[in-house]
Image 1 (cartoon, helix red, strand yellow):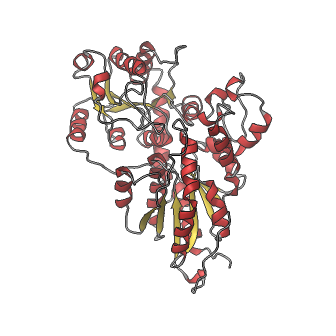
Image 2: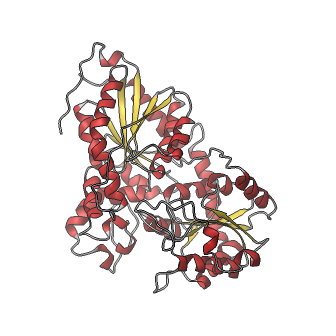
Length: 479
């Protein structure tokens, strides 16, 4: 697709610089990019978010974007329609379709911005690499913001070769795969989109990963002490990789009485005594697994704070994992569970202010789906994990945390696809009161200190952000 450049009356080098950010749809992609923008804006570099959507802006999007500091603006592109796609289309093709259908509007928006600013960079998210061609034709340096692990980035670079080398399905390979710059990983633990070669999600993933090397640079939300081998490998190769993490949302959000009740209850619990259970806003379990978690927490006899969502087999959920919030999830708990665990546990419907919960002194462990945002929030607060991956690249994250970094325990999944109550009770007790797991706590404490140091004034990640800011403020794009 070719785009016509708009003529300018002012030479580009005389216009003030501006960085444009084009995130993949979804709050899980927007929030980490927003955190990067906040750090970048401290260098007096103006930033504009250009937001694609397949409908009206969500309340969550609007809340985040309107609360950003001065110097960070946003533009919502006209919504595109996806109604012609099959109803069972997976998330990756949906996101990529939204990006592709938004490219003409993105082009017009970039031209408009270029009348008053010199676009120093267009920062594109994981699944938005089809915008690279437009950026090149408009002479805008394009960068990739990678919101997952450095090990996952190494896998992404190698995946096109792996696609050619491996015959059959990755999940059927018995031996671990050796991937340059990445820990050895079994095929069954590779990201969901690569598990079925015939699926459209596989083709979309391969297309996007093939284009990663077109970026002028890659901004990675991790830090050296967390992934030293992967980052060392990546920085020896091209394009340049800038580790800027751990960037997490630390804003305080007051959600009313439930928020107050949550922290009042946490304030009453002993230090490090509460296991926090939250599978993320998109992590929806079956009713059978919900039962096993309830009974497992009860059997563990440990204090718990559980963010509960309606089981996916009991309410209607679309392919974007959106829960029906009009249904009371407490209806799906085992009979008498709330009464039997009164005083020991607190169950919250749908949502909790996670960043603040994890920073509370009473939290001693986190049962997590291993989404990278949640993982980094756990790291910056020094909270060890029970790694319970659900979708996307989360199985790879779980391997990293449990086998490589060794700050997590990964429960065993039974032959029926469920983590049984006995296993849940066992791993919770091991993490919370087991002597053997003290090494996990010490390791996570060390990582917390390293994370804090990385983002200090002279920290490694702060220096990387500063380097990018100087580059983008001073770059002159050739005519």
